[in-house]
Image 1 (cartoon, rainbow, N blue to C red):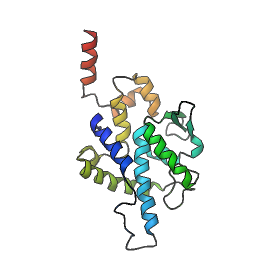
Image 2: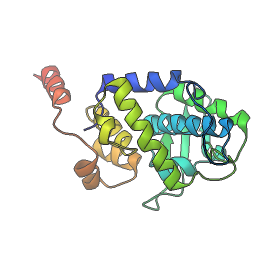
Image 3: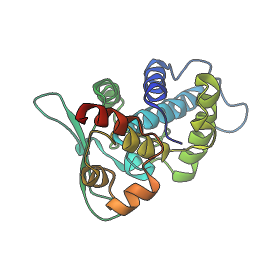
Image 4: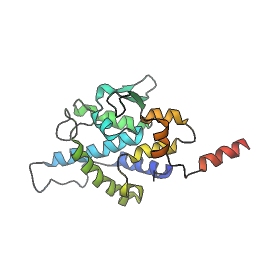
Length: 207
């Protein structure tokens, strides 16, 4: 199931407060240093924040470069996605200004990509390594925040959550274009229609 509004807000607040260096120790084996371990944790936190504010697919988020990040005169940020699953480019707003500010603070670390590989920000984060870190991190979120959706949900959870939270206020065709698939797929896989609170609220306004 998607996150509720309360769960979503608590999660984003928690992610923004996390210190990637806290509780991290140098790996006992291998060539990785303490700095490498902290960089990996910073990456999984910031990837989760980026997806929570955009609903980008994990591949789209990892391939986004600083050149793809646009901030207009109003301070609103967008990620321009040209390399998509459907071969249709999209201009995705970053829905949370605090997340935008947090991500922009990464610029001083350099690198071509907004996220990049923990070991080298000039390279894309390898998919298998990224998914492994996300799986472990989501289990951590499930335990710390007591949110069951993180126990089995992974990076697509944010697409389903945003789609559902926007259900009552944003037309379906707009949401489908935002997430990069057609209306039928949007309705079948990314929208939880079991929550009728939006429909009830609308009915009370109308009748």
